[in-house]
Image 1 (cartoon, rainbow, N blue to C red):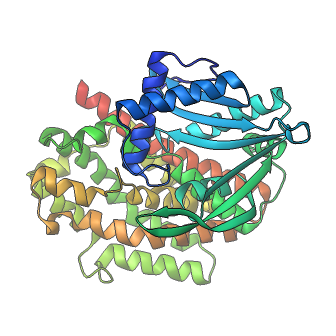
Image 2: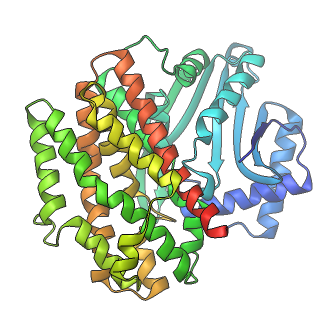
Image 3: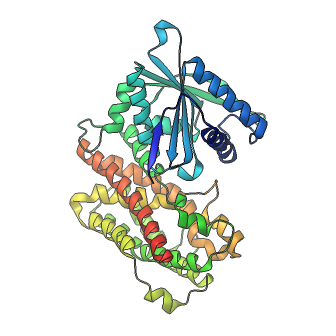
Length: 417
């Protein structure tokens, strides 16, 4: 992936078509873009004509995010013609194509925005957003703060939604984006929790081509079996991760929560199902993989790297906070991913004619891990008592998610070979 960020002053035919496609992709996958149905050809042409006119008049800037010749994102910034307000840049539109979301693009995009604002003497960035929407949570995680609100901000299907007006200085935004492990500031717990969740949600494995192929509507049985056998390598080790974290965890509410997590993993009692490894084995049999083939399967190098990375962290009591971040946040969070709003256990039966009982491993985790991730974030926030520990935990979530994506990349390469 070679992502480019550019600020064109003229929109050529290819870029125009890419922008219209971005709008339609956003309209299909969310209801916060401002349109109720996809743009037809005439509407698309009018949109680009209006945007081109705004660029030529001045006061509007367009950032285009590209991967090769594909337009995968855009941002619109506007500035006031009033001399006293020229220090303000208003972010009026931001779109990243659905299959490129949660792949770490947001940080670099906002660094490019910061560069543009610095070059044009914009020291304050303002925006508005529907309250409690995913973009609202993203802006919060990036440090934007509320300065006003309106009760009747947007109406969708006759329902009124409140909106929030937010702001942040360009300098503060850049500082947040570049404050990696060398940051000396201790983050308040609630802000740290938001950053943990942002690191989790900024990288998503269901956008990997191999996962998209499995879920593209056509059965790919050999590919599904190969990927599932690698996933099984992770499932076999998960209880050991939780047991080891429990061993090192200080006494208190978090230790009790880990105990309950272990109990469910081992017995399936809370979900009224079965041992979670057994649930995965049931799914493997349902896709016609024999027990002997399952037991003979070995982890690929990238799968082994993910297994060992987490195991090394949880076994060392000095890296307990990083092990908890890797397992309780980054790993548990993988089961919350959806494609176009649908989870794996909702997509697989339609494509592969599987029964609901075959997919209990996925449906149970999709439900339970909402709570497990929240508990994990709470645990990591409580035990990270220094700026260094906070930054180590954030970097661990980032690296674990990248290792998950790398595991799928390893599967992709092995399958292609």
